[in-house]
Image (cartoon, rainbow, N blue to C red):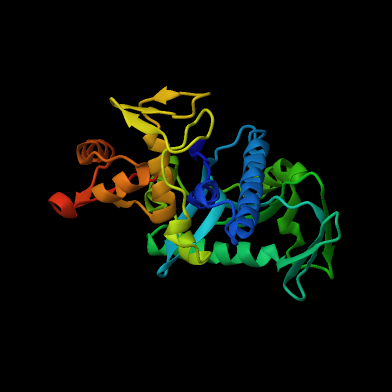
Length: 323
């Protein structure tokens, strides 16, 4: 049973919003595009993992996807966590194509792409072992008993050609997705004694979801982008024209070949604002970003959308939802 469904991460959505609104001539646009491509590939690998897990039969797993949990002042990320009365299984998805060589003796993974470009990464088993330690410590901090915990690195791209070098001590933790279900079935045969009751599992599951903390990163600072380089206005969802015009409670596209009209086009623009600048927004910032002169309109929309705010009158700051 899936208890926490997967959806595009805040990081992926931030990159999409930034790429969508960054001036096309900006010198960092290619860097943003490259990182967006990587983030989309990662999400595609996670979706492939979700599909593979649908072939589990007669299991007692609760599945939690895309968890980001606190640990000693920082956070750690888990692609998928399967919990059962018998053992926990953490799976890290890698959606990489090409010739992939993993050498534990130097802690390195090398990928050679079809165009002979070489990318170098850390040995992925180092990361899953670190996350395994962090998850064990999370269990202790939250007063749950220790339990059998397994971790896997699963390569999900059909064109990944794996070579594991020099007698890798954790090679049994590295799998292609075609062997995932067989591997999980083997673990179910290995662990036969229950550690948790179903009631305990539900409690742990609720606690994991409650402590999940989505990340937000200041991408303008990361890429040295000025706020002035961000295109403002409401984009027309039909033709892409900007800015749309606010008229009689609707947003109207001023492209004469389109003239699309809708009441809720501001929602996508505000979502972009929160992803790029953060969730805090004032009435003046609303009017500047959405190209509307009406302070009343801004106030009405913000109070209907935002469940929290601070300050009074012209100094009030609203907090946009980031779901």
